[in-house]
Length: 375
Image (cartoon, rainbow, N blue to C red; front, side):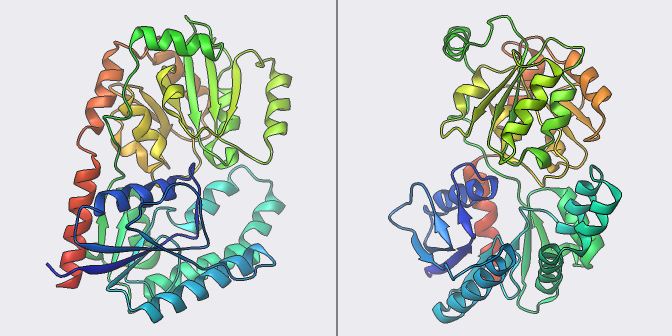
């Protein structure tokens, strides 16, 4: 088989970013095939396989808008010069061969965000220059003649793209995120006990985990409010510029002893292993990796109708699905969870559901798509 030259475009790589985790896992899986793997990025943090070629595009930026526009122009110029066989962009840049819609549809996110904003802020949101630029770029990308295929990580996003941009269904392939189920494993009773002692979580407490940076989007306020009328603890793993405000909010509710802010964690496995369920009432998320990671660790999941990860949830069997703002409903679901995930039927069902979502299967699906496009 001829060696293909594949370029993946991702503006930034952070170790805690969901889209970036997909890129690195895909690259690792694809490294087993006859591919010349390239990454076009503004900044790459973390490990890098010696077989990957990193191309830095970091033009001068003076604003959020100039950052997006500048990177798009520089990345497109680079890939046109290098003449790659396929360009797979994870950013909304017209002219790519494949677009992976890992961030969903921007207008759909804004509509969900508007639900928690005052009326005057909602009007500002849709007239904001940055958001208008993103939506225009997104529409231009889907209309561009160069676009051969779209990868979605959820059926939810596929349907939104069909509805909003009139893209043909056969042009869109759903490829779910992958999880290493040999790395993300449930703790045994002894390990769980040691971890809880280390992080000062009461041994008998019912403990939920919230994972994700960008607390507003991920629904942390609703997660905290849903703790009312429960005795559950909440581990918050991630970061946000407004973390001090969330800390003050927790103190005002009297939850300081039950909500634990852990910051960004390079090694997140121990935090799943001392929890009993994932609580992620996200406003809008195409498919957060946290859902697969938690389920692989044997945790039931509470998430939302506007989260693509809900496609892995069978309510009552391995978790629950709710509206992002239904705080009373989330509280009821917390009560319906097993008191301890370890040894529960819900926890076992959660892990069983993700066992087929392997990096090898992800690689097979991607290679099949590339083969079809190149042939």
